[in-house]
Amino acid sequence: MILIGRFPREKFRSSLGLLAVIGGLFLLTGCGAPKPRELWKFRTDQRIESTVAVGADGTIYFGSSDNRLIALAPDGKEKWSMTADFPVRGTPAVGLSGAVYVGGDDYFVHALTADGEKRWAFEADSEIRGAVALDAEENLYFASSNGTIYSLDSEGNTRWVVESAAGIHASPVLYKDEAVLVITLRGQVVSFDLAGNHRWALHLHTPVWATPALDSEGTAYFGSVDGTFRAIDRRGREVWEFEVGEAIETSAVIGPDGTIVFGADDRHLYALSPDGNLLWKRLLEGGLASSAAFDSAGNIYCGTGDGILYVFDSNGTILRRGKTRTNFETAPILTSDEQLYIGARDSRLYAFRTLAAPAESGWPVFRGTPTGQAKGVW
Image (tube, rainbow, N blue to C red; front, side):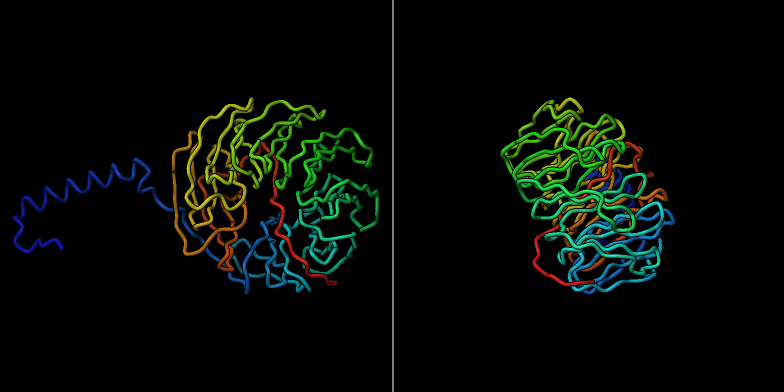
């Protein structure tokens, strides 16, 4: 206990000044970095494992383990929700038409209007763990956990189907509407053109859970369970490897200057140059919950398993840090109006104010959803 009742007034004032200086230094060093500003939070009945998708009008779409797909206005007010027969863990995809597409543990991809009305449902041969990818004509590309790769048109008609030799949890990614890239659980990296014709395959012989991130040249960056982070060019040639030593299960993100950021099971956040050299790494005590996100200034946002939201600058210095009473579970999504959305285990979707708009370079990435056996029809 500190007693100040008889403390001399002059010494008390000088002590306050000293404390003010120390406090200022504390803030400048990042140890007392100001917290990200929370705008609102929206509560569901069960945990949120679905990364948010944002429509052109700012509508926020996400799934919840309470068997709902939910649409919110940018101020966090519910617009509508659709009840399913299974926990909605997959990340929705929003087309230019405003249609919403999401795959599920019920073996179906569901298509809804922007108002939440059901348009159609397509049955695959097993659960769909990753997100649906869309091209410029709103054709769909997705994969089942059995390893079958599908392409549909926007009306739900089959364009083509290709079977792979192993299951797939990661999401397919598109390169400039020219090629589709898919990675299986056995580490087979396979490329097709948009008509479903095989282009090339690369066998890594190690499980890969993460969806790859693509740069503007079509180079894919991703980690694997053996602790190796790789760069594969668009012709299927391995460009470089970076050894971490622990499994890498979350997706990488690419910054405006080409910096590649990812997390590993050793609880570190890594930043690599485009040629594979380590720029910096930072220990996250709670471990990275999912992939990170960049804004246009090159700042990095990430949530941890112990409920801390970090903002790092491009040099790895902490700019913001905020602690919640829960654990984050999904990747943060940034919007053009400088808001950030992230889901948590306490059944809430959080909205924070960011420092800048999202980065225009790099490609969106989604984490493969957890396993589940629920089956039914929406």
